[in-house]
Each structure stands twice: as C-alpha cells, then as structure tokens.
Image (cartoon, rainbow, N blue to C red; front, side):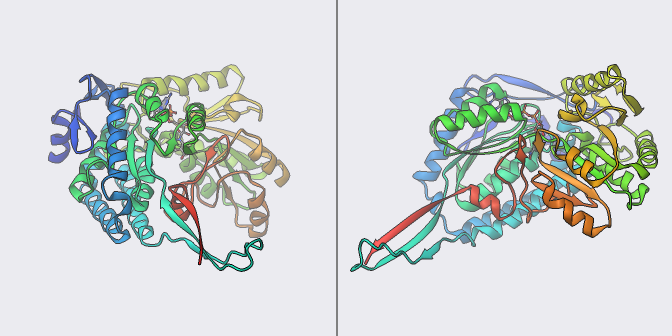
Amino acid sequence: MADAFALLPKTREFLDRPSTMLIGEQWSAGEQGQTMALLNPATGNHLIDVPRGTQHDVDRAVQQARHAFDQSSWSTTRPRERQNLLLKLADLLERDADVLAELECLNNGKSVQMARAVDIQLCIDFFRYMAGWATKIHGTVVSPSLPLMPDDQFHGYIAREPVGVVGAIVAWNFPLLLACWKVGPALATGCTVVLKPADETPLTALKLAELALEAGYPPGVLNVITGIGAEVGAALAAHPDIDKLTFTGSTAVGKLIGKAAMDSMTRVTLELGGKSPTIVLDDMDPVEAAIGAANAIFFNQGQVCSAGSRLYVQRKQYDRVMAEISNIANNMKLGNGLDSSVDMGPLISAKQQARVSGYIDMGRELGADIACGGTAEGPGFFVRPTLITGLDQASPLVQEEIFGPVLVAQPFDDIEDAVRMANDNPYGLGASIWSNNLKQVHRMIPRIKAGSVWVNCHTALDPTLPFGGHKMSGVGREMGEAAIEYYTERKSVLIRI
Ligand code: NAD
C-alpha cells in the first residue's frame, strides 16, 4: 500500500473500497467477478485489485453507450448543456485534484507534485477548453450550381454531427490525461464513450467516471471497463457497434487496432510511439541546452511518447553539453513519488525496467560509452537516468523507442546533417530545436518530419495545439480544433426549393 507516507482520507477511502467498473449507471465487478492485482511501482508491493473485464462486459458497456447515444437524448443535447457539464466536470477534477494526483502517483509511480501540476492540471484546462468548443461546432452553407438542373433553385449546407459511440483505449504513462484527451472532445461533440484504461493504471479513469456521474452526465455516456488489453481492448477494437476507435499506445498494438477498425470501416485515430530528436545548434548556451535536453528525456522517467530520446548537438558544444547532462543526471534523487524531495520516480513495471535495462546492456555490448547512469535499482522499478554516447545512427538504440530515462547522443557538423539524422527514424511525433538563430530555425522547421516542433522547449503541450504523429507515430490529431474534427461526421444536405 502507501507504505510510510500518509494519504489524503479520500484517497484512502477510494483504495479501501472494492474496485468496480462503470457500465451504464451500474458499478460492476464484471460478469465473472475476476480481478487483477495492481502493484505500486515505487515499492513493487500490492496496491489494489481491480475487475478483470470480459468480452461480455464490453458488450454491455457498448450497449449502454449505444442506448445513451441513440435512445436517450444525449446526442441531441443542446450545446450549452454539454458545455456546462464539461465545465462542471472540470470543477470536480479541480476539487479532487490532490486525490487524483495521489492515485496517479501510487498507480503509475510519477511524483504527486508532477501529477498535480502537469497531468491533472492539463486535464482540468483541457476540459474547460473543450467545453468552449461545445457551443462552436457549426456547419457551412454552400451555393450549389447543379448545371444539369438549370431551372431549379437549391439550398445546400454541410452539417456536423457527433460520430457516435467511441471506443477509447489508452496507455499507462499519463493515465488520466490520455483518457481526458479522448473523453473531452467526445463529450463536447455529443458522443458517448467506452473507455479502456491501461491494464496497469485504471484508477484515475475509475475516479473520472465517478466524477462524471456526480457532474450529472446521463448513464451510459461514459463507461469504463478495466482489464487486459488482449482481452477487453481487443474486444472493444473489434466490436461492430463502435463508430470510432481512438487509441494511444505502442505502434505494434496500434497496427492491430487500425486493422480491426478497417474491417468494419470504423473511424480511427492512433497516437503511437516516438523517438523524438532534440537538436542543439552551436549558438545555444550549453548549460541552458543541457537543462532542456535533460528535461526532454528524464521528465516522467522518460516514459513520454514525445520524449527527446535522441540528442544531436553541434560539434562545438557537444562535450560541454554531455558533461552538463551527466552532472544533472548524477544529481537526480530517485525514490517514491510521495516523497516531495524526489526528482525521479520508478518505471511503471518490472517488465518495463527489464526492457529499458536490456537496451542499456545492448548499448554496452555495441561498445557504447555509458556516460552516466546505466543501472537499475530496487525495491521498486527504478532505472538511473542514463546518457549513452558513441553509437551511430543505425544502432537500435538510436532507431527504436526505449521508453525510459535513456538518452542517446551524437554530435553533428552542419545543419544538413542535423536535419538528415533527425528525420532518419521510423517515428515522427515531435522534435525540438535549441537555438536563438531565428533565420536558421525557421528554415529547419518545415524540413522536420514530425507532428510537433518545439523551439527552445520540448513536449510543451497546450489545449490549443493539435498533437499527433507523422510516419509510424500515428494517424490523426488530439487537442485543438483538430480534435473536434475527429469526433464529428460531415453530412451534406441539398434541398431543391
Ligand atoms: P500498449 O500498446 O502496450 O498498450 C496501450 C493500450 O492498448 C493499453 O490500454 C492496453 O491494454 C491496450 N492493448 C494492448 N494489447 C491490445 C490489443 N491486442 N488490442 C487492443 N488493445 C490492446 O502501450 P503501452 O505500453 O501501454 O504504452 C506505451 C506506448 O504508448 C509507447 O509506445 C508510447 O510512445 C505510446 N504513447 C503514445 C502517445 C501519443 O500521444 N502518441 C502518448 C502516450 C503513449
């Protein structure tokens, strides 16, 4: 459990009662009453048991979501009401923000402060932003010509309608935030949702469902099914009564979801993996660049889809930037996220710790220099922040997503090299350029194949800016006006008058 740290009474109360999933208005232990154990990544100890849902539970949840969309009045609810409900839900998230942050810490390992300041705050801000969109979704009036019917007059317009029942499947690295990026636009547009949180991190999704009922959402508008990806996730992805699938996770599973969606022509958006470059030009202050590059990779233990996991530094500053990053990494204190003095928490699981350690070992075998870190620590699933140099561009450590606190750095000589190396990777989620040479930076931005380019910052997210990937990083966008696009269908209407 929470071990030596005191928890808020509401967090304690949430953990002490039997965990159930939300199907319609019913809190359910699942058809078979089976459970699965969650561990606290900071200790490796048992945290709580949650229901292990089944195909039957998914069927019931989709049925409830379908009923709420078609038979109840949710899909035709007035925009003002959808706006007010989302604002209410944001207020409730804010009220319980500290509890949500503690649950995220216990379940995922990230620090309470980070969870409160980043994950939960972004959820609150995003719901408020999406609440604004609810009243601003509108179609277009067009002037049709129809030359074959010269004697008639026409009124043409394009209406925007909610896409329908949404199946949402998310990863464990930002459990509530990833869920809110899907639930927010769905609720703003009048869709209903069946949400499948990651196997490892369902707690804040269950709390969100509780708050949605408290806010006054009609039963069935938001359903949450916990369980195993290959069981309930796959059942949701293949369900014939889902109108849109939205997935955040690995590229390997994303491909399965995409194929399942194509079989039934279900709308689909995929937010997948990344191997994002951080590019430092030689005009940049090396200390500022090192702090930026270290944050870009070590934030959230490197478990960030857009983490700056490849670092390219122009030759003049290379040695100094490496030394500064090693210094930052060596001084980072690892520990339980409930301890406010800690800089870095554990990875999500023993499996992830072994995966990340495996890549570090591979680097050693390939003759790389482990400039700092390179070790796993326990109890709990810790890996020390690691900087690896001396590998070339073709190395698996440069090409593949490691998803941990491991930075692989290379020097470059001119801008052409930097752009070529930044793009020489299967992924295309984000990239950052560190320079005050605006002319140079503006020339580079259009050449970088990534959904987001940050200048003198990295993974700086805002509700107004769409987020998503090029290449193997996915299909579609979340956040911004773009999100609304993916939760609505266009209907063309032509009236002969
Ligand atoms: P994952 O693909 O293993 O799991 C993601 C989700 O899919 C989980 O809910 C899981 O239960 C479910 N799932 C697993 N197998 C399934 C199946 N056969 N059918 C249906 N659902 C299934 O990914 P992960 O390990 O949880 O997360 C890490 C990955 O997520 C990384 O690759 C990371 O880059 C990516 N990610 C991307 C973004 C983004 O916005 N692009 C954000 C966060 C994480």
